[in-house]
Image 1: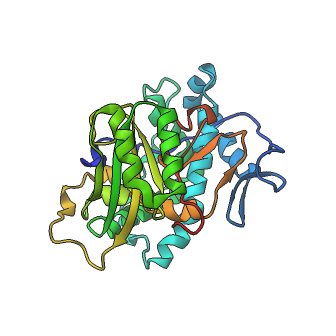
Image 2 (image 1 turned 135 degrees about the vertical axis):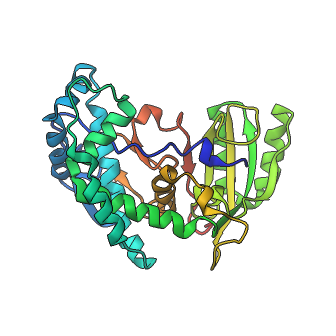
Image 3 (image 1 turned 30 degrees about the vertical axis):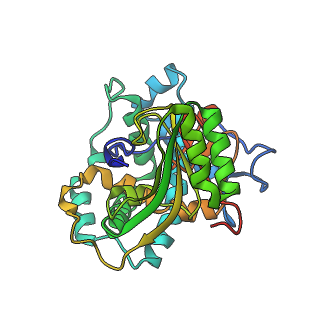
Length: 321
């Protein structure tokens, strides 16, 4: 698998969220007024709405309202709050903490001091995260970003994964194959060889990422199956790549073959969020349908209609992880 850093991880621009008054949906999380349930913890609709209300007051948010894009803000707000919820405890378990000198330097620069105008030409995919980050406040933003950077640095050069990969032609085939592999992980190679005959290609079997960024990107419980849209795998053909994560490991020390100085620093927060993926998957995140669905691949909240088109991760069956 060629490096995912140039294909999958977009540079961090900020975070996203915004939408009009939202209420919990009866078919969603089973606790009153809950926007998200992570394990036994609830992120309330009120918490999300508080962020949304602050964004709506910003002049730069007017264009989003005019373009009927306020739903982007709410989803981004939920996504940021989900990451924030698990990040602090996870970092403490790993013995990581915010570098206070870096925090002081960032505080001195404070990019949020400069107001965003109503005529901002910032692209929507950058504007929404920026507005949500500002609404949550500089301290929350800075602490989360610096912790994610520390997580990335702590795992780059140490994390690796062994995987099988094959290209398939469409989403239905990808989903079917992923479900078959999850149900029978020991048959992964045979199932992929059979699927490869349709595209007249060869599967990649028992491939080791080595201690590079791909090892971090494939962070997931063993026997998880990634379904990646075209361009996110290394097969060069087919509409989707199906990747079965056979095993993952974290070495005690950074590999001498890895030069962390070559990693684009703007990629580090996103890479750090991928380190959280196994914990989030094991906590069975439940999001109110009003906001969308959680996507374990992108580590974001997406509209239900886009959930599988944008790629997804099928978790292992109980007892197979």
